[in-house]
Structure formats: structure tokens, C-alpha cells
Image (tube, one colour):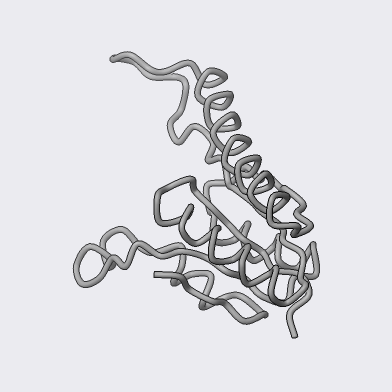
Amino acid sequence: MYQTILLPSDGSALSKAAATAAIELARKLGASLVAMSVAEPYPYSPYVEFGAVMDVQVFADAMQAAAHACVQEIGAEAARAGVPCTTHIATSLSPSDEIVRTAQDYNCDLIFMATHGHGGLQRLLLGSQTQRVLAHATVPVLVYR
């Protein structure tokens, strides 16, 4: 059925629960996982007239470290379950674009991702990475809630 499952994660509690469920699904199907996390770059210009600005490199290093820890934790859990797992870290202001691109690059035939279930006005104001992936993915997307 599915051979390669992409598992994007932001390290949140819901993403961790989704990872556990995805690992179990992969184990039952005999599939492998691609665990990914997106480290977002510093969203502001480092050149500001007034006010304190965080050092861009310090921010980038912190985001990379968090993404690395996230995928390493998934990789370790997958290994304990006997599920082959590749890890991937991307840097982008658009996590949804990176998720879709990574699914293509790794020939994934399923994207298994968590949603925070934002609805109504909050979803309209903030947007939803899950909604964007659902709109642009070329493979099935399983949304864990």
C-alpha cells in the first residue's frame, strides 16, 4: 500500500502524538519514514533603526537545533519500533511548500501530519500549513487530530 511516509513535525505535543501514530502505521505496513522539520529563517531585517533585534545567526542556530532535536527524537522512536527512518531538515518561510517539495524529492506516497484544528476566524487570520499541504500535495495526506 504505502512504502514511504513523510512525517513533518514541529515538535509540538500534537506532532509528537502524530509521530507515534505514524510510526505504528509504518510498522504495520512495512513502510519507511521520512521525518522532517522546517526551521524558519529570521523573519525580520537585521537592520533596524530603533529597538533591539536578536542576532540573526543566534536565531538561525536555535531554529536549526530545535529542528534537529525534533527529527532525531522521531528517528530514535522509529528505530525502537524497527521502522527505517530518514531525517530531513529544511529552512523556509513556507513550511507547507517544503513539505510538498520534500514529499516529491523522497518519492513519498503518503504525508502523515498533525493539525492543531484551528477553525473559524483564527484559521482565516493565521492560515494553516495543513490546509496548504492538503491543497498542493500530489499524494494522499493523512491528517492526525
